[in-house]
Image 1 (tube, helix red, strand yellow):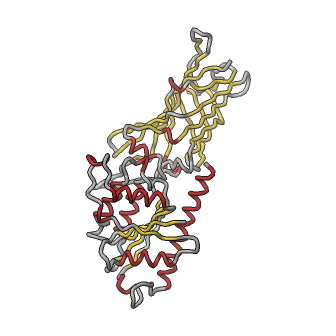
Image 2: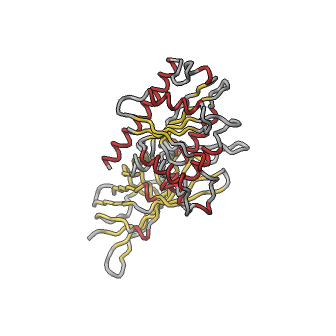
Image 3: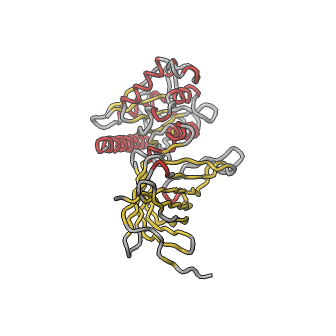
Length: 187
Length: 183
């Protein structure tokens, strides 16, 4: 079971990247989380360039196709998801019938330094993933005041309840991926 | 005026679909202003009529054969947000009643969309059977029904910036079927 983790934040000390790493440590045996760190290389979407897909876009397509499920951790910029994350999803949305996200189980989590935990960005990311044909978990996982959520060294989560919530979301995501496999085998 | 049900004029036998001369379509209001239409291209319909019992109409439609003017929109409509063709590859219909009311044909039956089966009633017309130059009997049948898509789990919706819904819940199903009697 391979889950592709996409962090919507590019900076090296990103809270959302840390959140993905924390999620990776909560996965059950047999499941792994792989990252994708080339979002910054993806140029603005341009329909004229669809026939010459940038290498980073091709790499993202392949990473999604190789994964059983996708987990996005998004920050919130101006009440929405980061432009580069939306831009990357726009690239892989055409043609829609061939999008690697089509039928792919996906979930969205998000951390912010504010009180709401990127709920608007998560809602927008779920909406966009749904439009791309992904099987999006209909739940949010807001992590507010994120600088207080990690232990002193910044790797592990400090709050058991939050850990349990993330573990529950991961179980649901893995169950959706298992169900997709079962359907693929039956087809 | 009272309507006396009479037996429809469907000659006994097994009738199968002529897909070239048939249409399985739908129409739904978009943004409350225009009617948006689509159709399915891969389907099978059979009509079985006996001498004494009511004819039975059975049909199945391959969801992946949905056609609208934009292939990206078709891909959206067959995705998990709408028909979810991967999980529910077929729409199905089986009639439970097939009768004439005056000049009108009335067909009731069970329609399955996604994993929801509901009783629907279609109204339309059935013509007289006509023989082609090769001796094959052809029968025309048209039926229309309006369903609430949300009753079948097709719940996608979006709100327009100034309010109001993008897609109506009522969907008109339109069948124009040409059936050929099997030898």
